[in-house]
Length: 334
Image 1 (spheres, rainbow, N blue to C red):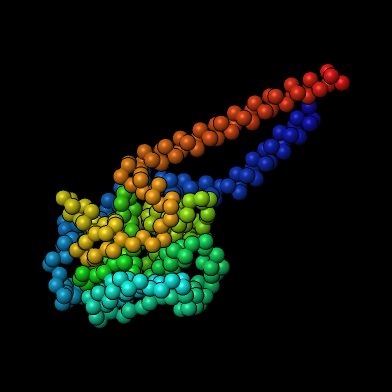
Image 2 (image 1 turned 180 degrees about the vertical axis):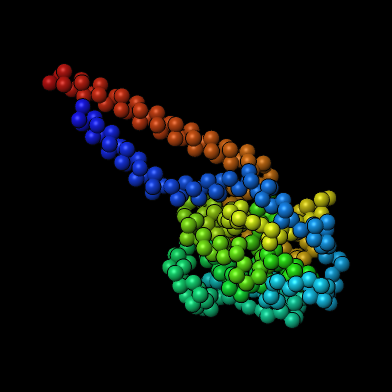
């Protein structure tokens, strides 16, 4: 009897320890998995519209001399254009050409290129506590993504992927505190972001990076998306106490995908080259579910996990029932 109580106590202690250790992971997983179910509600009031914002989503009303300040709006986002290129791989010719087009459309903006040298120095000077995590990322794109958030939080401005060739100026968007285009099927794209310095949402993107820094074995695409990428940024978006200062760029009701940067597309703002250079083999499997209701996809994943846990519990239960029988059989033989 005493042995049984001791085993029960040890089991309770073990469960308690495991719960404490796994609680942060399980909470983060819950936040990530819930995104497709809650995104529409969180994003509804943030979508830029003609009715709410008096904004022309086609950008046809904004010519090359348009000025946010002269149009009577506060200029919240500084005129700074950021591009990031980390690693030793030479910059592709088409990427340089795309950036040149953006510089041509923004002649009066400050332009910055962040490479390994100045990026490391920037992180060390401004976010020294995060430097070990930043340098430990398994994938280069994770460092690029994390750097985006830190740059925007510190300096503000617009940060663009190298595969975005600008067709016109981003000036009309400077009246908002934060802007990013909608992603498919849910969330926001981080390929283009505009923000004011010290934006509270961007601050939370930086602050939560260590909490979501987890490796998903054999799934590099999921590792990137859940730790620093679009899914991560969209999840942090849903954790904001208020989203009234955030804006999502989509399109009119008859063309809601007007500004989505998926594949090789032309939008009112960009020609998107659609390189996706960091995608690996598992990305094709994940993208196969892009046009499936994401709530159904995640529901299937949860059912599969529940089934695996049930099967594991069943095996443990049978093993425990079989153990006393085996011990009794041994005693009889003796």
